[in-house]
Image 1 (cartoon, rainbow, N blue to C red):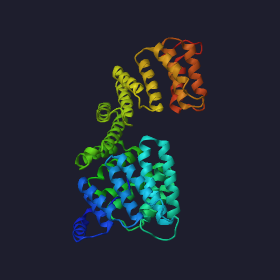
Image 2: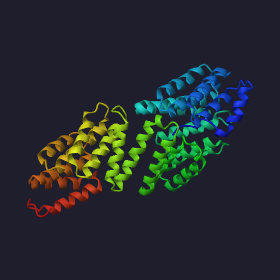
Image 3: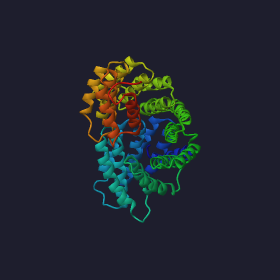
Image 4: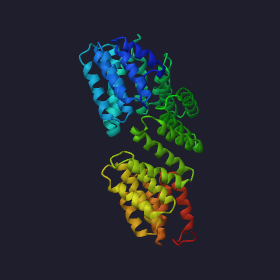
Length: 439
């Protein structure tokens, strides 16, 4: 979710006339730049923002234009350019005397930088977000109104939401939405508000806010993909999986109609991943496989979504008993230079399960024993691995060892309820004397 950039596009004619008449107001150029961006003309938008920077008469004014321009690049997936403009904005006001307007402007620039850094380095992005919030809080704490205060509330809400502080994000979103806003700004505000409500577990309210945002957004092709994606995500949390599936498909259709759709590979990837997940939940394994394959084909190995899609694809193949294909996916994750530690661990677990499912109990046993060394004593995953290791022992006929593992799972306070249920069923299959009874 990005911050608002411009008012509704129906002001284009008026702004063009003002500029034709020789306007020296940087706001006119910046607002027109935002408007034509929404209409799909990125090239003209870039020229207008550059002119807005040139004609700006104060450092704060120049910094604000850089920030808005940066969010436009961020929306286009050009994070490097967005970061440069955020840093330029910080530099422009570096020597300005501190006051609420300067603090808020500085925080807004740092918020843009934080969103960029989060993509490649979560720790670095978090530090930048806290730095941005410190400045925003100083500026927004002032009792006086000033230009940029409204969007300061939006920036702060965006950061708090990203940091997992849903209640604070809700409060800030509500303050932002109290201002007189343009249509585009209402859409952005309602979307971040809905996301915060969802994160706080207030799902019905979140759903209503997204439906309200959609009413404003019908004529804004560039915002519809994200709105439908957010709507589908909320519906998943409500266990309305068929509705979510429809919303994710609507998001894909909206991306096709988006004039910048070809530039939004990451949005396509997130949408297909979401669609794949809901198809899997509904038992539509072919649909899940197709959606995961779209991400694998769309994203190269450097993408943060590539390994996630390979894992999901492998799990879909495994659910469909296509073990050879499943194993190939998990092995690709393990061979990837960009896989996270969590993704590698998941791939190792899934690969071991696939070996078990293929009847290769000795190989699976070796794999699960190695995995136990990667888990802490109170890790829920350890209980799950212990359960699977018990299945391996049982599979090759060592019922005494199997019983020991199942009893360990039953005694583990950190074991997931489903794993305890599976262990209880397994114990019933094995007699107290260590002989198997039924399977």
